[in-house]
Length: 189
Image (tube, rainbow, N blue to C red):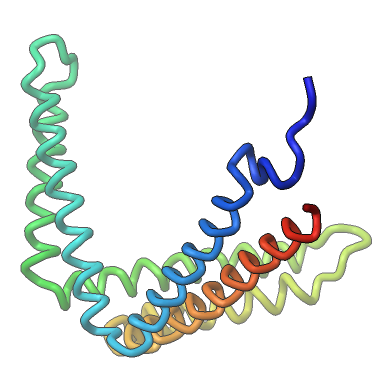
């Protein structure tokens, strides 16, 4: 049995033409998302909040349906979880400013935790490795997290703008990656 050549399959058995096209499509979608976030940050953020609310409501309904199964052992807990999810989902949709602030708080808390871990990694260190990068990363992450947690609503516009720029950069890199894959496939033919 012969091995498939480079022009037949690539990237986990996908046909070569599909692999570079999927890479290109992912890059274009990521680039478009980045542009939307950068240009229309408030509107995009509202859409994200509504989607989160809808996901919570759907999760609550799913728990209610599971609770109807008479063989389910945790029917009471599933019902309680369903009620909580539906209520939080409705609050997320109805109070977009509150939801946006919660998202910013969550990001800030994650950055604070990352900063503390980075500082500890830099202080404790690993023999033979530089401690500068973990200390620098930890300090920047901790500072950014404290700022975001201190001013969650005010820092949200900046977070969305930065995320948009990151998505645009990632999209450009993915598009270039798609073209590089295509170039390598043509060279292999």
